[in-house]
Image (cartoon, rainbow, N blue to C red; front, top):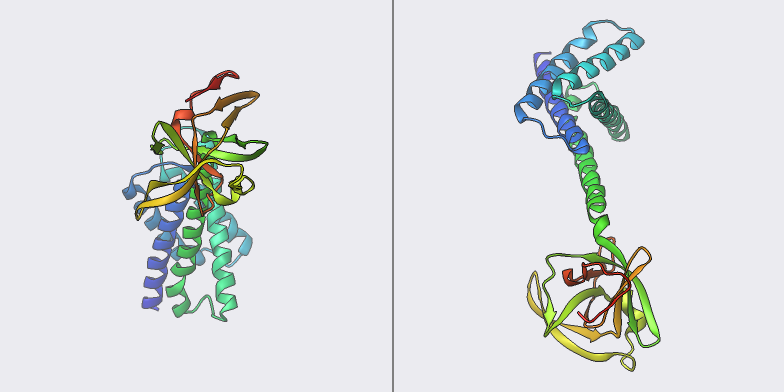
Length: 268
């Protein structure tokens, strides 16, 4: 039984540590690591002692929720009641969700969740679940952060044109001569890839993660970048075509096109 108690204490400490870390990442709040460790230890002690309170499921559930509210209250210095309630909701939600994952995983594997062996393994499904949630949150935060840099753009060649989502990348410093270069997915500009229509088609050298490579490019008649009802038109542009699809956009735009004008034609 002594080993079992140690497992419960250690397991719950690391589970609470992961839950606190994930909850703070989700709400975007930075908290000293030592404070999280102390709260995780308090939570582990509670997990060890609460079964001794009573066998009444309702009372136990109420006690768990009240203790959870207390634990989140001391976990950080919150600037407002709303901030505290938001964090508490996330923490309790993660707690109940991971609890369900543990029960489901052990049931699926046919393991007794209350056995000494199972208690020792509880951290694994929690770790995987928390890791997935953090990656998911980061993904959506990244989407939100990039949204203001993604604009509607149009590449025109003769009578053909394609509408695509362009991402302004301040790190894109590609030039071909005096022409700023935008990098577009081949799938996005496929309707324009007719050599009879394209002017200035040639391979250009671009830098990649693996070194310099030759990539097919062409010079469109114009590039139109939309800002609401405003059309920003650029003529001195070169489009580099790559065989990859970007995440959430179709082309990487050059920062030279970021300046907004009012329906003016610009020979950048």
